[in-house]
Length: 408
Image 1 (cartoon, rainbow, N blue to C red):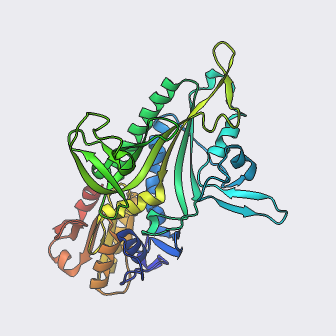
Image 2 (image 1 turned 135 degrees about the vertical axis):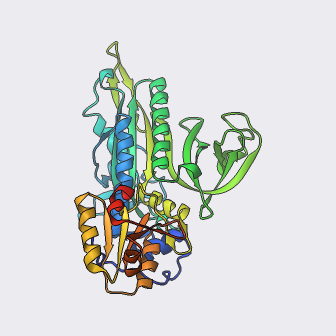
Image 3 (image 1 turned 90 degrees about the horizontal axis):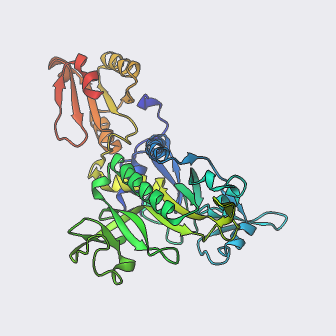
């Protein structure tokens, strides 16, 4: 893509009132635009990153046998009344049409998928079954802040699994937990993300959160120094030792929750009488697991982990482009390199704008693409083009014919 044709522009100053790194750099870099508190437009550069994240998650969900589909965001009141959450869920957006009929804007989809599965799951032979979606969610967040980390409208991946026996649920739960670890590793935050024990509520003894350590975190976690698993603040008083290894020494850190998994048991199958015939032909109530990752929150968390004072430093796996090509008065030579990148299917943002070198470099640091290739009088005189990684202080000049091999 030619940067001169990108309709968004960078901003020199941070938006007023924003203190989080993700809000500042995603706005200044032209990745997202704030419509109102907790609601953002994801702009072209941001959407490229979001799609990279989505594809990583999709690959890992497919790998554990889940099927992708998409459910409605507008839910009938009756379904939420059946589960008892219409009046109990404080952050549920409720809307009414001209006829007086009431609906919910979905913050989650148990009330939709459970009755849906009554139409398709009939026998134990259909199990286990798991389905997931990428869906816009709505939550009446009264404290919408921290950029896209805490929003009222946001993109989420939610996976639901169905089982006839608890040991089958336990087995799938562990598969999902392992898949989540792979997702966060591939997104570049795995080293700072900890499996964190949380209360299972009335469903089970524990649920699990995936918490990424960063100073911008709103949660407090206690990381076991022995096995590196963690416990969240809400259950620490009930869990004086590590649930995994029995360790007693913990390191206290601020963290952002990027995913969670729960064993729901029959909490949402029972209200809809979701049963199948077992091997003896006897109806058995199904049990469920649910597994969520907030893509918007994950996007913001990556920025919180990977930035410096100049801007974002995208991990290569989720970067909007693989290389940022910058022309400094050498348009003809840069055009040739740009076309060569395109011919080799290398994702490239080509800064062909008629602005100063300083502005181009500042924007490149702000946008944060992993590699910068500069075509200038100086580099050509030195025998090629200058290549510099975003997290390196200096670059090096290499022959033009070696660029493709270096970037690939």
